[in-house]
Length: 632
Image 1 (tube, rainbow, N blue to C red):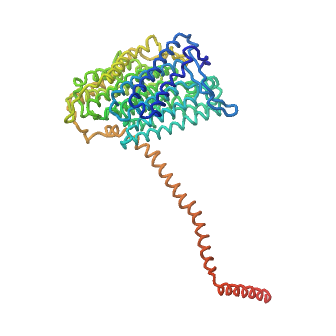
Image 2: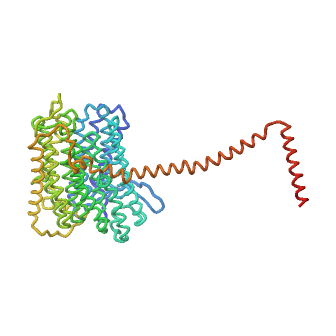
Image 3: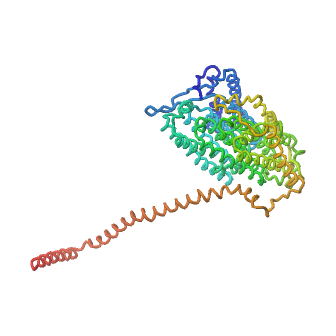
């Protein structure tokens, strides 16, 4: 990483990208009922303002020479202790530029969609305040020039996700889901906290540019520890195994929250952290291998979950887990895969936001029913939702020409070139994706109608369908970012470049193989769902694989067995030891003293004859003692 230059011209306004949504959050959350009537409009306007500014910054960045595409902005000294000073510094480079466009662009569309989706919610103003806070925190995360600034945004994202997942806290399930997400993410945060502390001890700084310049001087053990701690942090935010259990429960929040978490903000934070820290992972093969292993397990884990979910949002959540696994896999492949990881992150942001908002549109037309077994034949009842959702579907399965075809195929191709086993697993994941996404499409928009009595599906209002149309268009044309390897060259100053990998067969053969595997998955779904009657109730007699998928591959059971129950027993043992041992010793001693005092108190009864008798007994005792001594 080269030393960034100072911010001037339009880059001097970089801080406003964060400040605008942060201001919106402050006004909407502090202003109270005074902002109820127009708060949602302000909540939309300020992220849109950040998007316009992000576009201007991006255009200005393109106008610079490749070596000058890094700009820093010092806002103020955050804190200092001795020789250690941390500034509130921002860094704008090609990686940050792409994230800004995704966060503010897709985030703004989700805000606009929310105007219609949350129209009748009495706390709509507060909802938009939380959305603004979420966007501002994510922008802080990706614009920070050091790991402490990144940590500030990291924790802000965690707070905002807690508030939004549990927004309908009157539902016990929503409150529990918010706490679950918050606690599991704190486990990952411990990893990031320890990594930052180790950086300070090792390098004396947390600045990206400084650490990248001197990282090679650290020992291999230190770099490996840093890499593994950063991976632990990434697993928490990006819902990678073993910290994935919170993601499906997060669907308890309003659907726009699901879109924001899964497409533009929270789950992409881990991928950003790994990619931004490329100067550490490139020096530690052990940590890189760990990233690849975690990613490979997760992409298959999430795909299997998506195959058995009847809740449309949870099926998409399993899909998100799997697709983030592909991004993490790309990042774990090093310089050969960093750019493709970010490429898939961007295209996924387009088509996954499209499908989550599309799912919200379906729920809007089906009286908030999320069970796909109660859907069917919605393609004619909701034509705009159907057509836009179909664009996202074709993109995620990798249909030729759509955005996912270009981004995911490049990750699989790179994985096959680097490691045949890992590449084969990624290829299998693509086939499973074709199956579960086709299953979702068939159960929702095709097959016979299975609507609940009294339900009359209807298309959503224009304020909800226009964002769907925009996202659908991006799902189709997002692959243009790979034209002439543009995104690879654009990100090269940040993540470097790798030697061109050599495949045993021409790339077109790999492309045809991936397409064929996806086609098999689609065909299996068609024969199992499309050509059969879909029961309105889930079958109870199913295979072990289906039971495991319905139970999220026993993620909660594993966590309970390995972490929750042992921790509960440990705490119970400690409290018992404290109560019986420590408290027993303290309370027992005081009880003994109290008993002795009580016995002695009986002697002091206030009667003179008793005292005289005691005196006489004492005299007799003294006399007897003296006589015994003399006789001896």
